[in-house]
Every structure is written in structure tokens, then in C-alpha cells.
Length: 208
Image (cartoon, rainbow, N blue to C red):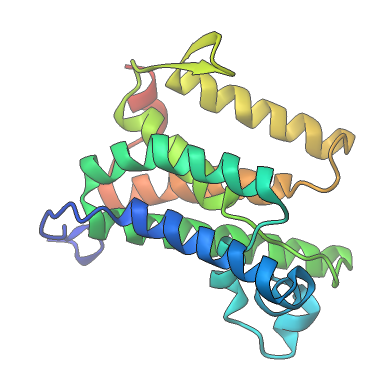
């Protein structure tokens, strides 16, 4: 059996709840110790990475710029992540979550370096969250999501809509404070993860 596709023994240990809890604890630390100190030490800043802060490729996923940023990310992680963890098992889910989040951050780092954005502070779990949403659309293509609680969309249509919105926002710079590139990279890395790890073509699965 291909080593890259060797499955883990299935267990569902509620990893999503631990991830949500860790994000909340880091947010509380921002409030207790000052957000500037937390941001500078745990956000992924290209110039700081070059000085040795390589751990920020992981820690940036647990830092959020405000309560709404934290809430919407954790809400999406809870809604979609619990279903994906139940489908994959906890170990596979954690591998998927961290691989997509780390590589989405690494891709953004390369682009920031090439464009001279050395002091951009990348923070938030959005890259991994977008990957989880893609996984949801692949595993549950007939599931209907009510966007904003009123607009019913099938999961694959939601993912394609988010992709189009991120591309539009990135090129028109309608929300320059949002890391659209990282969101798109989350989708892209998740797509490759399914191809390499599971031997599944996400497009074929979403079209079912």
C-alpha cells in the first residue's frame, strides 16, 4: 500500500472542540496580555520568519484580529469540522487541518516575499477553515447550506461561490485587510490533499 495513503485507525475524539478551545484561549490571552504582544509573536510576519520565527506557520492559525473574526471562524469550524471529523476520524482530520493551514500560510509567505510585503501580519484559521469547507462539499455534495440563514445552496455551489468571491475581492481589493490569498490557498491545498492522500478527484465528487 502506498505509504501516503495508509489510513489511520478510526477514532473520533472530538478534536474540533479542542481546536475551538485553543483558539478561544489564545483570544483570551490577547485580552489579558495585550493583542500587540500576541500578534507580534504568534502572527506569521515574513520579516519575522526570516529572523527565525518559523513556528508562526502554525501559531498564526490560532490568532484572531477581533471577536467577529474569531466567532465566524469558530462557527464554521464547529458546523463543518464536526462532520468532517466524524467522516475522517480525529487523526486524519487533524492531519488535514494542520497540513492545509500550514501550507496555505507557507504559500502566502512566498507570495508576500516576492511582492515585498515583508511586514504583513497573517493571522486567523481561515485557510484551514476554507479547506474544511471544501472537504465538506466533497464528502456531502448533496447537503444544502443556508447561507446567512436564508439562502439555500448545495455545498459545492457554496464552495464555488466563495472561491469566486475571494478571487473578485483579491483582484478588486474590496477588503484589503482579509487574506484572500490564504483562503484560496486553503482550497487549493485541500484539493491536492484529496488527490494525493485519498486518490479522490474533488471535482468529480462534488458533481455527483
